[in-house]
Amino acid sequence: MSVLVYSESENGKLKKSSFETASYGKALAEKLGSKLICVSFNCSDSELLNKYGADKIIHVGNSSLKEFTAKTYSHALSQVIEDEDVSVIILSSSADAKYLGAYLAGITDSSYLSNVVELPESLNPFIVRRSCFTNKAFSSTEINGGLKIISISSNSYGIKENNGDGIIVNLDLNEVSTTLKVSNVEKQSGKVTIADADIVVSAGRGLKGPENWHMIEELADVLGAATACSKPVSDMGWRPHSEHVGQTGKPVASNLYIAIGISGAIQHLAGINSSKVKVVINSDPEAPFFKAADYGVVGDAFDVIPALINKLKAR
Amino acid sequence: MNILVCISNVPDTTSKINFTDSDSKFDKNGVQFIINPNDEFGLTKAVWMKDSNNASVTVLTVGDSSAEAILRKCLAIGADKAIRIDCEAKDAYSVAKEIVSHCESVKYDLIICGRESIDYNGGLVPGLLAGYLNYNFVTNCVSLEIESEKAKCAREISGGTEYSECDLPLVIGAQKGLVEESDLIIPNMRGIMMARQKPLDVNKAQNINSRAIDKKFFKPDEKSEVKLVKSDELDKLIDLLENEAKVI
Image 1 (tube, rainbow over the protein chains, first blue to last red):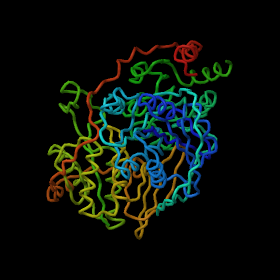
Image 2: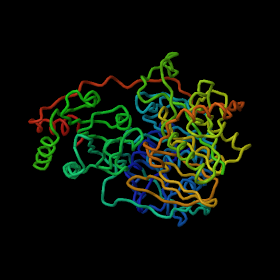
Image 3: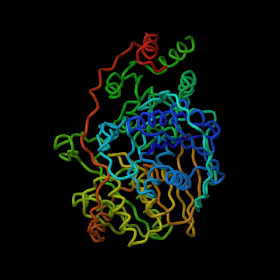
Image 4: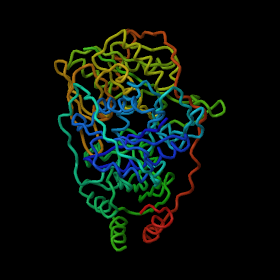
């Protein structure tokens, strides 16, 4: 039996999340006494997965899989699963992986659990811990059924190196047909995305207006961070909707989340709870966000942010 | 056009989360339940499509009789018909299989679910439906236009938007953007009165075994007190982030 990891790539290169899923997959394979197989599509650097303990790397180069769609990628993966003796499939928590995971579970009649945060606490029965209630609780959940699919929360397990000597196998698959055609993808280039960022700098109404966002962008630049905003800010059109983080916006699971001029409404906290370290900068010492923060600065953003930028630059 | 909107009955965001039965069950005591926010964006879109696409809108939930209050609210918002599949919603798999079984007897051109519920946040039901029914599927859906059996969709992706076109039948995972928060329909008195006349059917469940069973719930460890740094001592903040938290 094998553990199979779907290793995500973008523009032919592995994504960082694929190292975390491989690290988790290796540890799980060792627990199960089985092999780790990594599968990537149209990816030119899949040999890097050896660093994380791959026993076999399957490279699928297929022109019909150039554009990601949940249906074509799921059917391609299900063909790989038929050929290999797979017991567990590991996915990341990226938007694409979650899109694909549930569809794959449907077509393969598998048991799927998302938001998994740890290695299984028991293998038989198979029990894993997942987050629920927007990170206000965790559940030890037993998964029944044959083939299991789990997606692990970003940054919950971490990247662990492990020597692997996986041979790279090129695989040709039957073309999967779908009437769903991707017509266009609009993507900001050269900017760190909220999903991939280690650090997210987020600001709220305390910034007083969109004209003041240059200092948020500068702070993000200095830190190599992505920029985000609170719901009122995107509702008022100060910043694009794509930057809105919170319950109805994008989820954040970065290592560091810096919130500037955001009071910390419960809906906002629900979206950013799984970030590891939270820094709050707010002029109001009573802002509820301070209760959820690890570090706090009570002060005016217009004084604190420029000073912080200067100090970070001087490091 | 026939539209099905799948509705999840979830605890209000501000609810206190507690557990009973030796931490194996969610404590519903004193908790107010609402229409899952992502489902409500989808429902609003469906109600608009009654005008734009001459659609008929059915709302469905899998749950016990306590879920009927939110179905009545969906009818007041503008759905034409409601169905409750009479069993406890135990996990995404059993809920999806109940809906699949219903969709095998009644054909829908479009099935709308929220991209995820705010209780378990699994995001599984729409994908499972599409997979089992072999329908097209677009989740994180922020735009949808249907014209002569063809759908044009937009999906929010990391750092951008992906546009696609497909045939019906289609399953979407709705989220904010499909409609805006300010577009949400607050039922008026006429809507509430009319909702009383609309059908709310209770269907027998298939009683499918669940595949994910919560054995025990935990709350995160109590957070330690925030460490405050004076606004004129920012070197200290940088030092803490660098050497204590090790995040920069």
